[in-house]
Length: 338
Image (cartoon, rainbow, N blue to C red; front, side, top):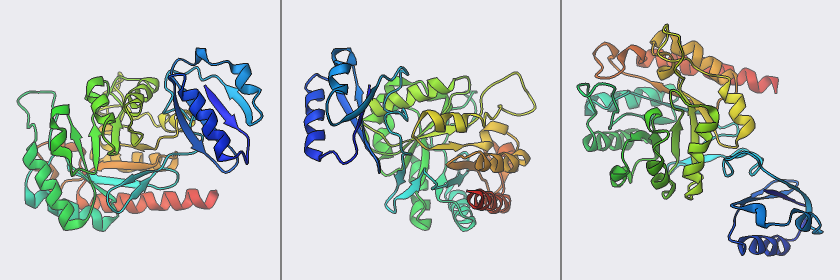
């Protein structure tokens, strides 16, 4: 249920209404805008008398929310959420465009620091790098694990870039204490026990869409994190599996405007995993920026032919610099149109 409170209602009256609702063993989510306050009610709202609430002099209207995702729903939170990352509070969402770049896997200190310096110089706002790597084959490189996180933290000390890395198991959470953004990969999008544990943290969570999951399922996974108390969620479209074999996945850019319509959460795009081919990353990154994405996450390696993971889709630093410049031109053109 969504309760729209009339403009200029006194805070005391709003608090009284919220206290009464919560006394019914329901939870509330408050969104305050320039012209109204929206109270989202979460739980079994059948116990609330809609006519009674509508008749209150401070209430402008009451709406039932039919979708199963509540906290992530734009009806509950009409304004775009802005997620703040790291000590410098780098913003993502509502016009704040993030560029996350780095190698698929952390391989060595020299490699990750070299890439971190080059992507920062090119305009990246965060550094990505895999320490724990879910691989299709058990014989492939699985990442440096805890040592990989330590190397990421060293790169952060060298460059000041916040770090983004993937978690695979809730038992690893203590290792992520100094990680700025915890990524949930496509294979773990519906690992609900992991999502609930991440909901108990306050760290930003980058949630990737599963390779065979619908938009609604992505939003329900975000709901698991938010229902446990953590509202700092960034969604990521990274391509879905179709019958097409020319690319690694099929990048569903239509998901960006659809998600923006359904949810207040920021939406970024991963053109690297979506295409699996380095030469396709630039056009898809530009398309993502043009269709309203709130950011990009791009794989960059200083020596792609010898990368231990996903070299075929990784850009060289100079290629990433070219992409970053072109993306900024697209953004500038979009702003000029507005």
